[in-house]
Image 1 (cartoon, one colour):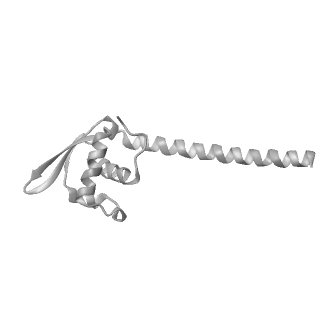
Image 2 (spheres, helix red, strand yellow):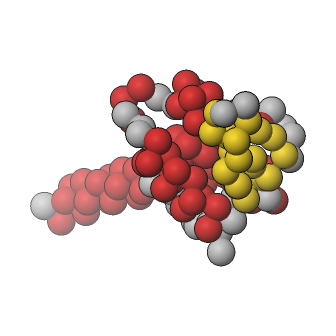
Image 3 (cartoon, helix red, strand yellow):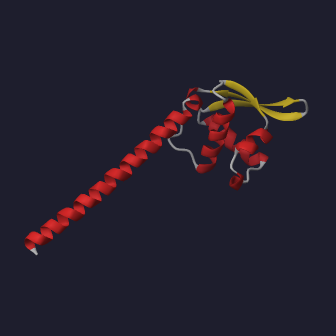
Length: 123
C-alpha cells in the first residue's frame, strides 16, 4: 500500500534516496552517503535512518537489503514504481494543496463582499 502523505522525516529520506538514485532503478548507497544528503537539522542516527527506510519500503516506494561492501555497511535499493514517480506525485500533491488554499481564500473574499453588500442593503 502506498501512503498518501509522508511525515517530514520520511519525506526528507525519500527525497535523499530519489536524489541518490540518479534515475536508476537499482543502486548501492552507504548510510554515510545517505546522511550527507539529508538536512542537518534532522539529526538522523543510523537506527532512525534504518527505521525510516523500513517504513518507506513497507509503503511500497522501494525495496532495500543491507549488505557489506569492503567492511562498510551498504544498502542495496531497488526503486519500485511509486519510488520512481515520487517527485511527480509530490508535485501534484503540493499543487492540489495550493489550489485548495486559493479556493478557500477566494471563498472567504466572496463571503466578505456579500456580507458587506447585504449590510449596505439592509443596514
